[in-house]
Every structure is written in structure tokens, then in C-alpha cells.
Length: 69
Image 1 (tube, rainbow, N blue to C red):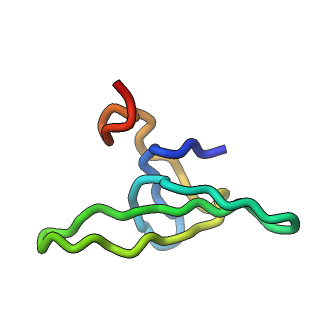
Image 2: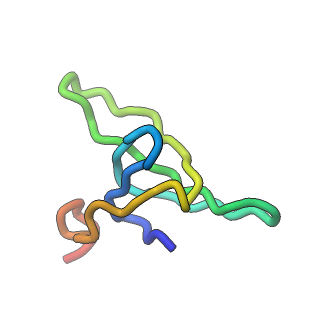
């Protein structure tokens, strides 16, 4: 299970960001909401949602994203 706050990457699209939400359904795979990084123009990308098994954790250090002491 992917913990919220970790940096993840979608294996298919290479979309990368912070796991910020988790949605579970009765008959489906859990989905993780991923917020991408702010671009060079200061625009915040729209959150994307991916099936959990489609994501890989690329950074397990919560301190680098400001969620841990």
C-alpha cells in the first residue's frame, strides 16, 4: 500500500508527484491521487488519479516534501 506523502511515478505515463489522496471502491482497485510539481511558470497542474498498482514509489523520505519532522 502506498503511503500518502510519498513521491510516486506512474509506470505508463511517467507522471510524477506526491501521493495526496486514496480512494477505495467495493469492486475495483484503490486509486491514488497524485499532485504534480509546480512548473517553471508557477502553474499548479491538475491532480491526476491512478490505480495504485500502476504507481511506483520513487522517494520514501517524507522530510523532502515537508510532511515529517
